[in-house]
Length: 408
Image (cartoon, rainbow, N blue to C red; front, side, top):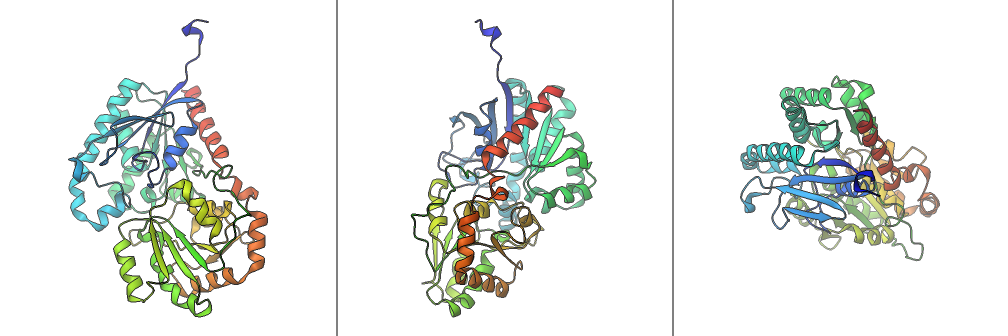
């Protein structure tokens, strides 16, 4: 068999901002989890921003990762520890990093389009990545079909008229658009995007090998668990506010906070103000392999999502799927994206967003209800939750990307 007779893999270029800086990085890794599962069908190259301690070029789980420098090393802090939008809101001086970030992103994207010669491009986030590839496509005919995936913050938070116009421009140029929840599709449609161009394709969770029940582990009767970035839309402030009411009914209850982010100092101060130091434990960043142990032992997992002042809100909230996959009872704010995961009769208790009183009542109900725990253990791997397994999700994205290559 000659080399020419061997069909080569198609080349996929992935462009993102949030991406693991190294193996085991606690930063959100959903883009990498998808990219590495696409290597069966594609030669995958990922372009992302550099960060202190990260390699400029490396192979990570079969994925070639290229990182671009956008500032001196000690100033490359725009992306991590909270995300771009949160970092800009909390530290306005970081707007000075944005021009360098955009120029470096555009230059390296154009260079990779010319050198990698991808058959298809998958862009994560409408802004700025989607805008950059759409503009390059205006001047370079070598830009192949591209899919843009919106994860929430880029759609919900960036609402100034010029940015809304930029999103419409990206939508017109994109071959296809995916969003991670149904409410996001509706939001894009209201923006004027053609509905037939949009599909709901959530990111995934490893429900086959990692986030699974283990009934040999004894579940706590009093540990309340929070997992997530310490940013406004995750709502930790409201969960801490709910703790005094929970403790009136359950004096032995305590809260474990797994995560990191720009709000940590404020949340610790809040805990001190409420004299909850012996009832709230900040354990910091937890890697993905360590998370199942937390979900399997907790009495209840709480996701107190809210809409941030900027308009940003949770696109889907896959931490709740991780918890459910491990058989952990879930209390979650009733934000629009949640009902795609948990129906009225499903295994989550819904609470009013931003309301510490109703949140406390929901937590108390979950702690009291042994029947609820039995139901969760029975339904931990139900069809709704299993639809978020990476095996299913990666197949849908692979089919979409392959179809774009074939039709181009």
